[in-house]
Length: 602
Image 1 (cartoon, helix red, strand yellow):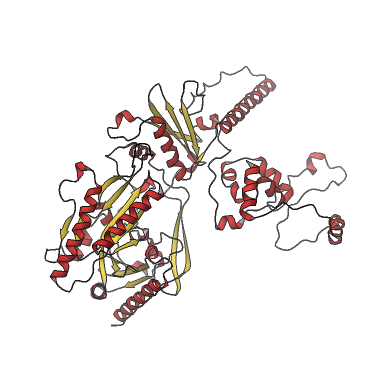
Image 2: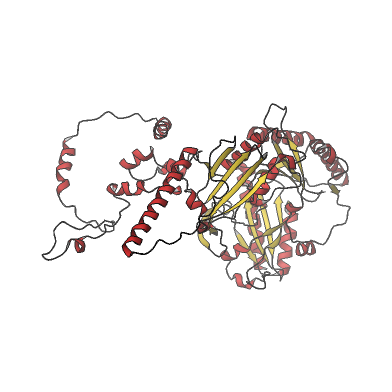
C-alpha cells in the first residue's frame, strides 16, 4: 500500500527519485556545529528533557521526569506513528508520500488540503470486538432487508442489492475495512483481554484473595466478523465513530445490517459554535458580516429508510437526512404584454407537461398532476399566505421516479423528479432531479434532454443553487448575502411592490433559520416568533423573488410588526464564470440598494 501511495504521488507530481549527492562544504560545516547548543528562539515551542547530571544524594526516581512531547520534533514522530487511530489513518493521503515521507518531512501536504485528493476506499484501522461490545463506547442498531418484502424491486439477487448498499455508503465518505484488518483488530483485542486478566491474577495473588467469579461476558454483538463458512457475504464500512456491518445470509435470504455508533460522538444540540467573520461579497463589492454555525457531530443518517428506498420501496421519499444528490431548475415566466401572450405561454408549458407525463409510470400518468393558474384566477392575499405557511414551497412538490436502465444487462439505476404542484403564470415553476442510485453520466443525459425540450418549446429554464431553498442563508461559508433592515411596515410594503415593478418574479415561500439575527444591528428591535419554553426563535416563513434574468435572488423576511429584512444573493449556479451575468447581478443589486436607501430617507 505504501509503495502504491508513493508511486501515485510521484506520478501526479512528476517527481523522480534523487540520486545520492556528495555533501557540500556548507553541509559538513553544519554537521560539525550540531553539537553546539542552539540559542533559544523566542516564541518557538521547545521540549525540555532532564540531563544526566544530578545533585548528590538524589535518587534515580526523583531525577526522572516525563519528557514533554513536541509535535514539531522529528525525533518524537515515532511516538505519534506508534499509536493508531481512525483519524490518523483516514486522512493519511494528505501526507506527501505516506509514512516514509512523513518521517522525513513532518507535516501535511498543504496543496492536497487545498485541493484534496480522493478519500481512500479502504482504511487499516478498526476497533476490536471487545470495544464494539462495550456499551460505554458503542451502541448498535440492527435491522434487516429482504427482497421478498418488496413487491416492485428491480434487483435480481441479494448480492446485487448488497453491492449497491456498499456503494451508497462509500459515496457518503465511509471506507471499506478489509478482512485482514478486522482479523488483526480481533487478535489485538484478545491479547489485551488476556493481558488484563493476567494483571488481575497477579494483583489477586499479591493480595492473597480468593478468585472472584468473573462477570459473564456479553454475547458477541451482531455484525462482528465470525467467518463465512456458511456462504455468508460480509462487508464492514467505517467512518470512525460510525461503523456499518452488512451481512448477507443465504440461509435466511436476508441482508442483516448492524450500525455501531460511538457514544462519545453522539449529536448534541447544545454543543453549537457560532463563528462570525467578514467576507467580501461579489454583488456589494465590499465586506459583509456573516456567521457560520458549527456542530461537533452531525445527526445520524436514516440508513434504514435509504436501504429500503434502494431496494425499491415506493412508499419512501427523499428527506434531507438521506444526503442524496440533486440538481434544481426553475422556469421563469416572461412579462406578458396581453392575455394572448399569457395563453401562448400556457400552451408551451402544456407541451412540457406532456413530456413529463411520459416519464412517469403508467399507473401514475392518469389525470393532471399539475394545476394551472392564470392571471384571471383568484389568488390569496400575499401577507395572509405568508403568515399561514408552516412549510416551504418545495415541501409540497409532486414526485415520481424515472427508470434509467435501458436493458436488463445494465445495473439498475433510477432518479426522482419533483415538480411544483401548481403552475402559476405569475411565479416560477421549479423542477428538481434527485438521485441515489444513478451514475452521473445518465443524470447528465436526462438533464440535457430536459433543457433541450424547454428550448424547443420556448421556455426559459434556469439552473438554481441550493441556497435558494436552504433555511440557512449562510449555507455556503464563502457566500455572503447582504442583509438590509427596513424598520417600517409601510416602507416594507413599498419595497416589495417595487421589486415586482423592477422585473422580479415570485419564487414561493421558504422557511428561514433565524441565524441571520447575529449580523443585524439592533436585532432585538425585531419581533420574530419564539418557542415558549426555550425562548429561541422559530423558523420564519419568507417570500422569495428572483429576477427575470435569473442572476439574483431576494428573500424578504417579515417580523410580526411588518418590518422587513432584505437578503440578496446571486445565482452562482447559473452565472458560473459568465462576467456579463455577474454584471447584471451587480447592477440589479445596486438598484435594490438605491431603493432601500430611498425608502430609509423618506
